Structure formats: C-alpha cells, structure tokens
Length: 275
Picture 1 (spheres, helix red, strand yellow):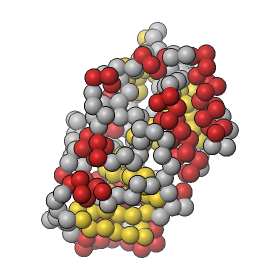
Picture 2 (picture 1 turned 180 degrees about the horizontal axis):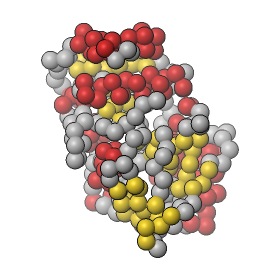
Picture 3 (picture 1 turned 45 degrees about the vertical axis):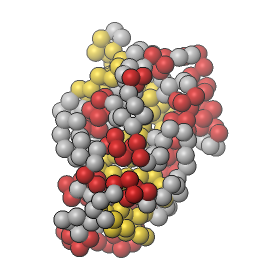
Picture 4 (picture 1 turned 60 degrees about the horizontal axis):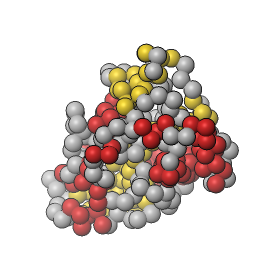
C-alpha cells in the first residue's frame, strides 16, 4: 500500500512555501500527497483516544476559486503531477467536516489555529500539540520558507523516544537515499548506553549500515549544541511526555528547538507506530 501525506492547504504565499516543503518531502521519499482545501473554518480528526477539533485561521479560506490550481502549480514546479485532493464525506455537524487520520505523515505549520496571530514564531500551537500527542503518524513542521534538505539529522535523546526517532530517521534515509547523522547529549546516558539500547531492540545493523556520523555533544550550551545541526538537514526527533508534550532532547522544549533551528522538523509523538 502506498504511503500518503496529508496537507491542509492555505492559499497564501506562506501557504505556498509550506506546500512546497510537503511536495519536496513527498518527492524525496516517494510518498503520495493528499491535499485538503478547507471549505469551513473548523474540522475534526478522530484519533484512537482523542478527538481533535482544529479551528483554522480565516486565511485558510482565502480565494477558494484559485486554491486548487495554485496547489497543483506548486507540485508542477517540482516536476510532480497534481496531488490527490480530499473532499470530506462525513460531517459531525453541517459546518464541521471529519478529516481521515489514516495517513503515514501530516504537515502542520507551527500553528494552524485562529490563535496564530497572537503567538511568537517559535510557539507550537495547542492544536498541533494535540495532533502530535494523539496521531500514529509523524508530523512535519516545515521551515518558514521552502528549504530543500540533503541529509537526515536524528536528535537521539530521551531513551523513551530515541528508538522511535531512530527508526524513522533510518527509514527515511533509505527511502530518500540520504545520509543519517545522530546527535546525542552527553549526560547520564552515554553513547555506550544508547548502543546497548539499539542492540536490545535489534537495531545494531541499522546503526552500522545507515548512520554515517554520531555526534556526542556536551551536556550544556543548548544553542551551541544545536548550531552543530547541518543547515541542509531534515531534523527528526521524538516528543515525550503527556498533555502538552513538553520534554524533548537536550532537556528543552519544542518551542526552544523550533526557535533556534531554521530546519524543517519531523516530530514523532508517543503514539507513533513504525513499520
């Protein structure tokens, strides 16, 4: 079965940049894009243990007459055929469509809600957090403007989430034929501990065959550590915790990582199921 990636399209210049990032990701990994052009300001996503209502910024409804053509043009710019456009079949209420959740990936900007005008550029909105917490698929948070990548950088930190991020990074490295680099913080869990963890999970061969570099960074100077992440990398990391999903690699929070790094982030939530 082909892999699919969901993208909620905003027919604006910023929305074009986000869609370009999705198109590039899909082209690199051989994934089929699925684009939803909203016809309402809200939609629902029914996950296994949660129902997420997304209240869109009004700009998502801008110029509906040109939205489909503009989206198709983005893919044509990268030499791709038009994406599949999804039209909701089920509605919880007359103006509240239900969007399927059986995708392999989804793209979300840092916020897709009506609160976006009141937040800083590094803030991950509450609806995106809820999707991350509940979804079985990883979420791509793209850079502010279209930025191609040539390698995969896995932030291999908290053992509870490191294996999920590692599996996904290696999988993408193979699909995209790109090198994979690991970044680990030198703390109470050293490199030997992580090697043992991967061996226990039967991933030693993946480590040997797929990872070209492994950087062990000092347990301080958060921003200096992130400076080591290549500018041309897709960054894969795992989100930990419950509720707001606050804890991430380097003992920081998602907002800090997104504020410091200009790279696109592919985030693995606690319910991600690798294949």
